[in-house]
Image (cartoon, rainbow, N blue to C red; front, side, top):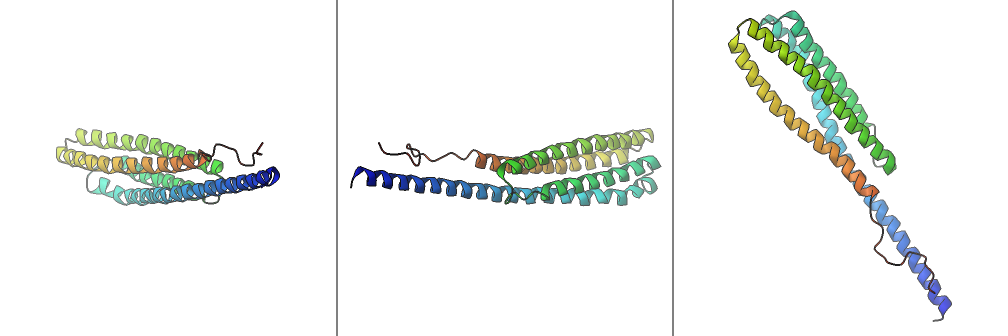
Length: 203
């Protein structure tokens, strides 16, 4: 075999390595997108649960006034909180499912994942700020009426709700991070370990 044939064989080998690298990178991207899509669907389910939970509050709001004796504006605020959180969770759900990680370029998919994380943070800020205002209103109204039995029940309900809320918080945080980490891993997929770049001529 002369030098020209050897160089031609080496170039062909380099092209095969280059094609293999591209195919491996595409496979890694598809795998990462598939994993990100799985986390995306699970995160969307948590948003739907938030919608259904929010819709329960307007149904329960009349009970605060007719059966527990809270002021009308507190019952109205309680129901309004549920409506607002339902709408916010619907918008959050739409922001999650509108992105197709399997078809988008990785950069665009990553930008979408970051927006989802930002939307989740805004949703939490809204829920916490409104939630605490309602809790304080309920507590102050109960203390003024010296209804300690109701106050004790409220504290038990608050603890149970806090446990459920923290569990949902951790789940959503883990899923939103998983989406970003999967896409980030694909974007930083290392090149081939071959020491000689593909297509290099043999001198």
